[in-house]
Image (cartoon, rainbow, N blue to C red; front, top):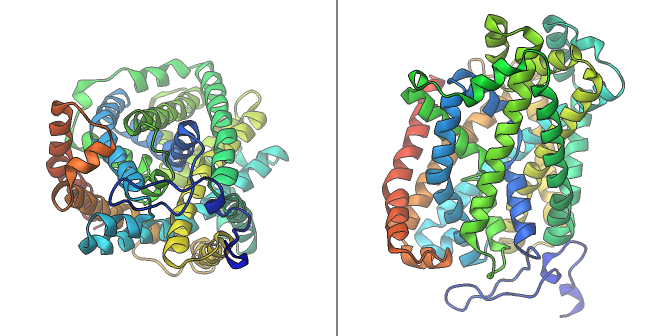
Length: 478
């Protein structure tokens, strides 16, 4: 190695010895996670994010609680698990980022890698904007500025005044974005894995603590029953479709993340068991998040129509208007509110780190950049698109499509259009245009029945489900 080739801080080339790829004697040019634990915690951290904390509780409340949970768990154990291990296997087999991985399976599908790369490029800037909002609310609860959440009108006014500003939301956005990139600069082992091993256990402790606290509040039992007692009269096609869509977003599918992390996975680690643990962590966290949100709302409102109205709020309204008001009315609400938003911060950070890493991996592999240079390039893109998203609630609020702000437009393009298209393309590639048996060998699928089940899922069921998500997303936007 000459002086020009010496890796700088965080270059994963020196983190682990090169490892032979599964096909063609190719050699991985990067290291990876130290072991299965590091991989599972990092991948689970990617899956556990804002979608679990504000989207899952809202959908569970809207679509029958226990019935929605039943559908979600059933889909996670079948559809979600198959897509998850497929992406991990693609990454580990090829040892490449998304562009190289799809090209390695079939050169004619290199375009799919570029499409997949666009997803994290679009998502991570506005995700960091929302992460900045979380930092602001931690500050509000920590400094005792909770009087602003005394009632719905004041809580809504506080949120609107903050997000509609110019410099303050940008400052908090930059703090969150800089923290994300700082971790990625240090590489897979010294950055992503090390932080995941700290944040994921903390996430678990905080989630359990808050869920127990919320469930012990007066009137919370009604909310618990709503979540865990399924009423089969609530089962509708919309319930199944909502659970399918949530699962798709929640497990970080079609974003290039699992392919990227899979390329860092050691050969001796079992893909199936790792995928099962990731899916289990993601599902459990979503359930605990719902146990925090729904019982808290029932306790604070007394149940009935008031609870239904509060739970009908989705996304930012639920997270930044309804819940702060609920926590403000609880005993010890200032502390509980601060702890809750710290939980949200950790979940958002582990997800944003994975999004940035998916982009950085491609830049290092295809543009031959040093890690720190790639991180700076990504950070610059994040600043530009993130500021646009932030100002879309204030000075640039005149830019909108119907009721969609700039942030909403980015979110719609990524989640409702690009991700389903990427998932459909991935299933078609894996099912028809590459060696499906070789991918199953990478997953160590030995049982004939399971191999047949996997082929049916990837070739037929998953593409149809993805098409349903795509069509429903387009239809609902009209």
